[in-house]
Image (cartoon, rainbow, N blue to C red; front, side):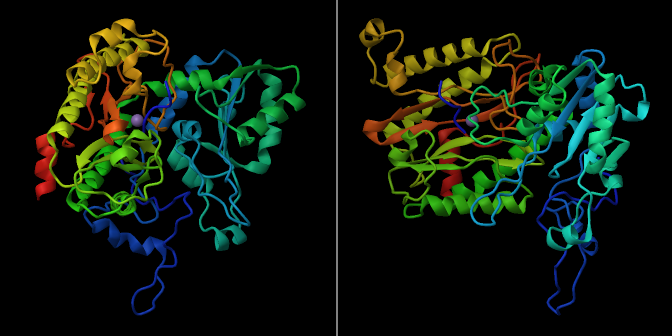
Length: 479
Ligand SMILES: [Mn+2]
């Protein structure tokens, strides 16, 4: 996605997801319960228990995340994190719920209406971590399927004290009376545009009305700091998302030929992503020819013509961890000379920018470096003259006509992940690297994007096995 401008526990059959296979029937019409579908686990690319789309994550990850948050909080302070709302569409429709990334990071729980309450200094030890769930009932079971039991939520999150939501007001009140500070969660992603009042926003408003004299603190600042640095378990989860993306991409290189539509290409990706237990990490950009110059092109409804390039900014998310890939391939299987020139220019910039992802670097320095690399390539491609660059308005540099977006962004539970982007890069950050050159006049755009782990030993490309050299792409498409 282009940046905005500028250990399995055996026997766990639970899932907070609504997608259900409980009504599965054999060809003879015999009903099979979800737990009896375990033979699916024998299928090679579906090694998980029935009822979960991906392997259970060791709760140690979430326990460690909570412990790390506790270290950043002021003494005698509590923190609350709410699930996301299920958003309405039209009539009685709703969107599938998008799990709240902060709640997931701290608990592994995806279920709607869940509340996490942390108070590391609570006098009563049992109240240091409390998870609140909506209480399952018969009607919910019939209409929506399984909701988490308290034991299941304990197993996922590693939190011992799990209560039903009806207990929340009393326990919260008790802890508020003990605490000196309360951390509440707000969306502090600097590019977020929010027109609806979120569950968190309603909670903040209610709290402030009910407890007006408290010292409220911003949980988001701490969450951004924590989530920016990925633990080895998280990196492994991102790698798995990258591996699913790779499968989709390879499938598409075999599928694309003159005459296929962007829509059909999207369906090929969807097939691989969904059968692998994932989904699109973001609305896919499948842009043939000049469409590649529309940075957030989402129509994906045009035919792919011989002689054109096809820009694919498409990637999978899996287990709530995202990946982000862009490749640009020739519809007919071979680059023209001009396309190859532009492609190789972008690839050189890409390699230089990957090398620049080192601890201590400022994002803005990295961006500036990318722009310098692109500028040189634009001169070599005959698109800019040195004289244009010398005369340019520093507010509107000449390269911006051809490279107008950021060179990369943090990646993790969110595609444009949270992170303190004004601070120097640290080992453990995962950044996308995605330079591009867009030539509207020539009806082509090239962008290349991989996901890179920053380490003390140098950048590690988490997508190193996805072909990127022009000749590799051509070879893939000849098959
Ligand atoms: Mn991206």
